[in-house]
Length: 332
Image (cartoon, rainbow, N blue to C red; front, side, top):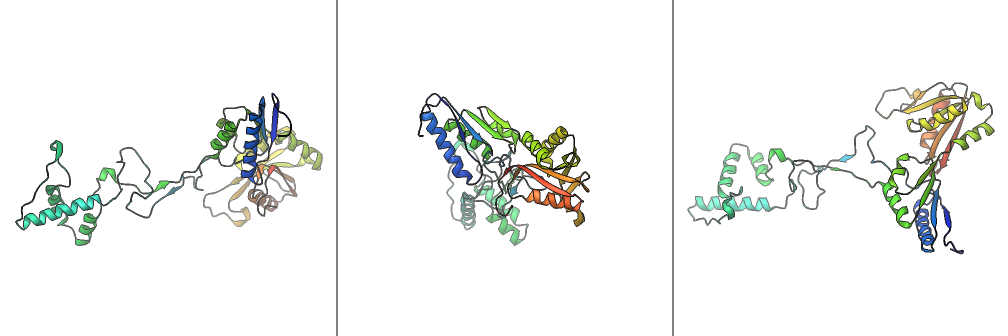
């Protein structure tokens, strides 16, 4: 820092796009440097909040949480543990060959006793009865005599399981919720105030214990439409997905124009290709200028498919107004 910031209000402007990790680390170091230099107040201005698209746990297209089932029916201490649930033994399903070793000892005692050799039985503390004693092994042996050889072999080599405590393979695929992590990093670095714009998920504001201002781009978008799009009063505002319907509706109401919505149908359907199979338009755009409103365009896949659908439905022109244009890959 070239100048003194002692007892001053410092505003640090940083972008959340491009090399997001490098920009985030630069921001954290700069905030810490300002606080070390006795700045009175540090405000981080982030037009595009980093990792703002990773606030929720990912879900399948059908709406079910991602669960990965293991192909192995037995577990070792190096295996991923199964999902815990009430009434389940902590070590159920874990096989460290101790049970099989105890069973082999019990069978050896049975064979020795049947041959007339004396068997030394070890006393059990507290007068308790162990399940792997000679009597238990005899009972198990008598029960397995009535089944075929394959089933008996599988039963004797496997781990004995109580039906009420059957292990359930598979483990929930948890992911880090980056929203809480980024909030903690900014707060720990010394930020006193955060200013951002059009958060992809407004719930991010709840991750902070410092003031967060989420500015809206509606006035800028409205001004651009009025100044640069001819005959805008006869246009129609379109939201490319249901999540941005509230944003697009607010702009349409303020300009007193009509509104349309593109609904993503993610479930398997047998819709004709004319309707794009996974996207359905709610509204009439024929022979009109359609204006797509969205908060963020990364790969531009949603915007591109929405524009193609509008053209198929007879729109004369299609404009796309996006607050944050990341435009990664072949988006352009």
